[in-house]
Length: 413
Image 1: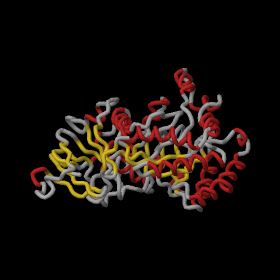
Image 2 (image 1 turned 60 degrees about the horizontal axis):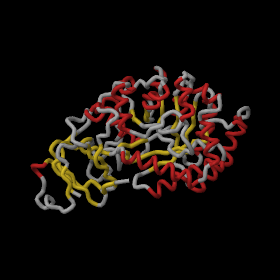
Image 3 (image 1 turned 180 degrees about the horizontal axis):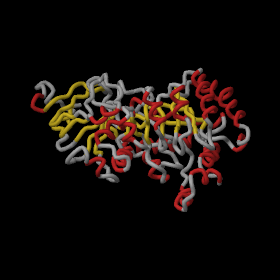
Image 4 (image 1 turned 120 degrees about the vertical axis):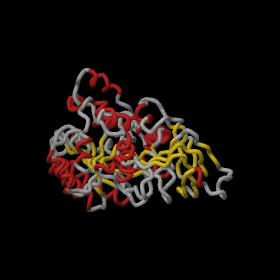
């Protein structure tokens, strides 16, 4: 496939650039008035229109992208899209001013989703998750991480992870699976935390490892959920089975979650709506990626993460959706990029880098995804005609994506 007359190619980082830290997020390399050649699902070559080789200029598979930009696909490194039902019944409670903790105490929240998921079949979960994933792909997402965590029993956690494996097999984008049984304590273990942790360690983990169902392990480390000590215990148990940590940290409070995550060599710490100088000092000395989820802050009405200070501290910042039925019922990465600019005051270049290359790095796939470079996977999207790069986050709520390309082929859903 040859694409010509491209207004600009966006995100032309060198292939060996795997993550962007601090001020490097400001640099979004572009090539104006360009052509791009795709072969065997990979980016084969690109250049300026005035230097297009004559032997490829007449290829039959040819698209003109006049007035349009080409971006690398969004890389969404934090989602919970396998769930049984939406939770709009909690919507009014949020409007009434009920807090996340109050909704959970009233039987809502994660336990609400767990009760519904335990009653759903694997096929039902697969069908509903497939619809969500198709919509995300059409909105420009070309790589995704999906978590379990709404099962909270061995049978249901395994069921969720098997659904994620089926999604991996059926969809043309790379998918990483994260085991998140340590998402909340089931009601029967409310006063027996160690009993549930033992169930995770002694029953769930061995079966997950045997079936090779997960790439990562996650824990919701927060007051009212899993303590720092409990988090450490679960992460160390997962490490014995080769599962690397990706941790829900500092969503509602500065809890010590970042410190225990770094001690366990976490790939990423996700949320960080609450942070302080100690948080930043800890992360400065680590390779852990800071994954921010602004649409969660938008929906819950909680503080937005301090992206500017994380970038100023030379940290690698990624953006993701946190798509889930309770706190972020949206998988639209375009809106995430807009919120990052509007509410967290990230520059468009910073937000785009965070949602592409650094999102890929948070899933350990930035060697192949997240930027436009020769030899990388041709997972891209072509915009509608736009006046500038900044127009994409500026025009929040409008879909600026016209064509999605996955593995070098146009995707229509």
